[in-house]
Amino acid sequence: MSSLAQSFLRANRSQMLNEGTAKAPITFVICGAGGAGKGSIVEELMKSDPALWLSRSWTTRPRREGESENAYVFVSPSEFQDRVNRNGFYEWAQFFEHRYGTPIPEVPFGSDLVLEIDVQGAVQVIEREPKAVVILVLPPSREEQKKRMRIRGDRTTDISKRLAKSDAEEKIGKKLADLIVVNVNLAEAVSEVSLLITEMRRLRKT
Image (cartoon, rainbow, N blue to C red; front, side):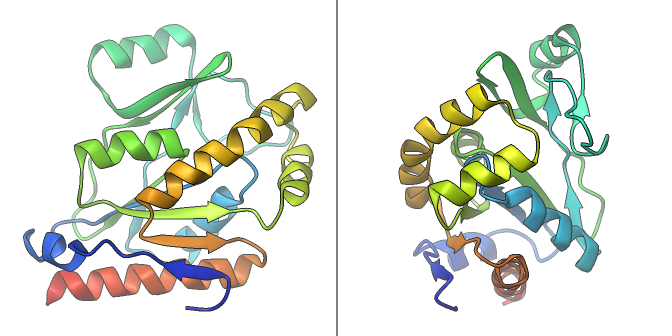
């Protein structure tokens, strides 16, 4: 591991993976505060690793100007609530005035699952799936985090609220994480995560 990341593999990780079957998908939870860059890391991983399958999150917030329509599944509050009522989410949370949720996925055979969520969501996933591998993405600084959120079009009020929550989120995330990546350079951060994915797949086969 380079100086950009520290490995915090839970002591029973190898044993937990070996308790499953050799073909069982591994769930990789990539989490972090807004502006950490987790979305950029996931985007690059999906380009380079055809054996990864991304479960797109649902949200009730409107699409930002210039934002890809594939960034989320954009739904109305009533559609979101209907899925909640049917117990159709892995996890969901209210973030300010909007809701975000990760639908219960049907992972294609031979693929491993990627979830890109916030720390609160990661806590809920681990409660349901203790074998999930958690990767916490951190920004290099609060100033850089603020800059990234501004560039992607977040409102000033939302940026302030997200920054205010970041310290608490990161404290919780560090307790969950199998890997902590400080996202200074995107290519290096992606490499760190890819190495962990490779190692987890190796452990599954042993």
